[in-house]
Image 1: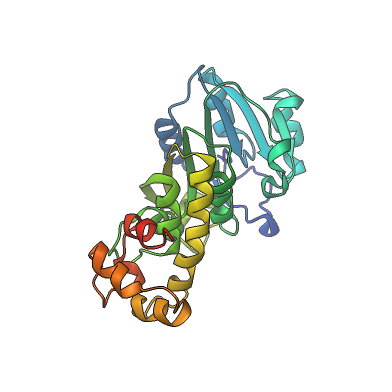
Image 2: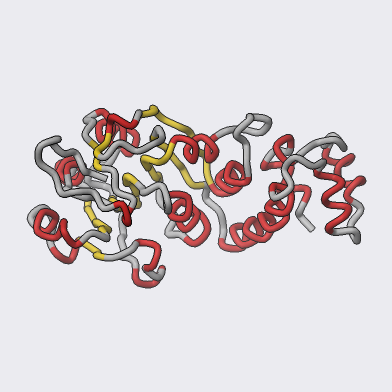
Length: 265
């Protein structure tokens, strides 16, 4: 995350990498507070940039591993961490078997580019490894959708997906002037605490999400009608009655818990 830079001196942000360098000290302060690292943890930082947050993570005594795509940061980061503690390249292209192994509980943090933030979160929640906590700076809209409850106006497929695998809450919001260059949207801190799920339960929830996706692809339509039309072999009306789901409910009116019961077929 740690791209705290002076306006007069910084490596120019690359639009192709979705870079917006942080110039607001409140952001790393909040991430550190929510992450709560110490010597008993291993911390993965995704997108450390110039290493401002990295320096403070090192001071906590935690084991640190960095993932950085921008080779222009090589000299800066290798002056902070041993070479073996840095993985260069796109985090999303790293196979699970090639990720570092740690014997300590894992914490994950980062200032995620808007174009890939959701994908990185889904990778952790669906495929692992399962951290004790993840704290990311994201586009405010994404952080909101990942954390809101049922019946909220921003409740979405992402809300259900996140709730299937974790408890999530949103932190503070930061405007465009907290970054260089100024993004066109606000950003927020998102705190995610994964649930302890067996591999079997995780696979089941991933399967159920396929049904949930069908509904949210037609989110303005009555959920029961969509299900009857798409999967006519199942008595959905009986399921709705049994679970106490209103037959006029739209996808945003059905809770994650109800979805798990509804599609437990």
